[in-house]
Length: 170
Image (tube, rainbow, N blue to C red; front, side, top):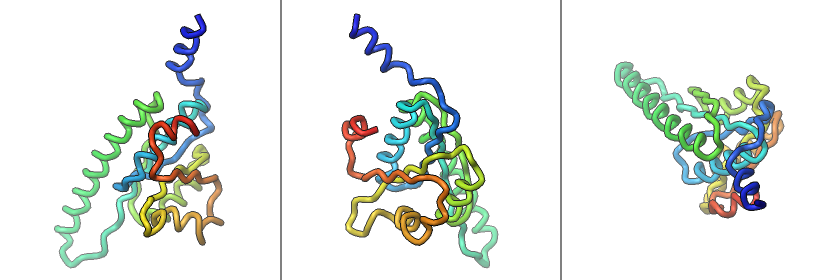
């Protein structure tokens, strides 16, 4: 009987708490999957929700406006496909569809703007690169001179964590 209640407890996430939203910045880094899995597990365990932000970096002004528009359209389509793929993964891992945000501009600036515009976002989850070059530009910026502009805590997830590691700590 105890096994049945344990199995039942692990099949259903806790009741949703609309005030706990874990924001993950979607990019093409290797550490993204670790940050995403961690955020999903935390959302599952706490009854929260995951939000995804994808920022398309603006291109420099080009004398070839038609080519620039085509490049922007291709970037937007690639971003939408990536977000759709990540949203499916979030639903699988957390049990709920994520909130999706698309922005265009400087990634760091857009993360800061979104955190200030959306009071429902309560935690920023970032994956740290494991290379000798450092944790990554966004982690460096938001834990360096821009840390004073934050209104929420940041959880930095080491990029080398395994799925089992995340299960233990989240």
